[in-house]
Image 1 (cartoon, rainbow, N blue to C red):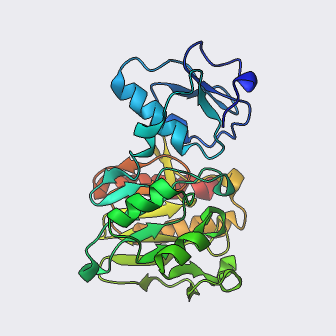
Image 2 (cartoon, rainbow, N blue to C red):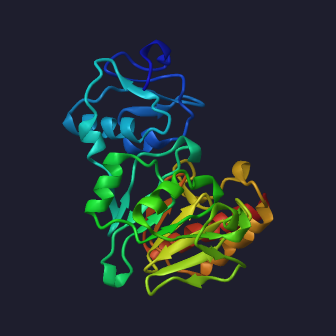
Length: 291
């Protein structure tokens, strides 16, 4: 719970505040940009919510915060923020909210599909919390967990045990030692079913992989994201834990695929036409080769 006596001085006066435990994960700024900003290394409230819509988004940000660094002076109920998740993103994909400090606030997604088409897929792991678990149960549960890489797995064990679902992860990130049921290997794409294609993308970590859904939505983990500053797709060299050369090569491989949406674990979501996304990816690869 956020502590008002640790309230950051960069917050404007009013109901909502961010305290000094903030780890600068960017979740609140993505969820409620009308209220939260980056003041340099941490987030703060630059404008108090002005209407019910902004209030709702601020409460969603409070709930999603991985370190419980967002608070309200009056200890306002966060119920509307809790019940908002999973929240719709695009097509039949939902953002789970409830990010985890163990994953540095990485975003997790739920793909909702009929059982005859393979059932629901949990992409990376959020915090295991009762309200979220109950809502996922109402939406059909989890039939498969896709784990992009070792950084963003959070409470995967609890989700797997609760939903009795297999997990899929690459051996390069120690999948076998984590008890993963489906361990992938190598660098060749793997067809999971008619709608899901797993693509190994080593670079950020040795065993990083992305998931392409219906040749339309690309779940990118920490491999690729949208940069609002550059207004294009980007990779982050300062958090490349394994090999920038390999990550560049992996990025170049993605040029062979078609997608319209990038949904990362860290970084910003972006949607566009397949042609636009291909052009952005080409620019990203060219920039990476120069670094």
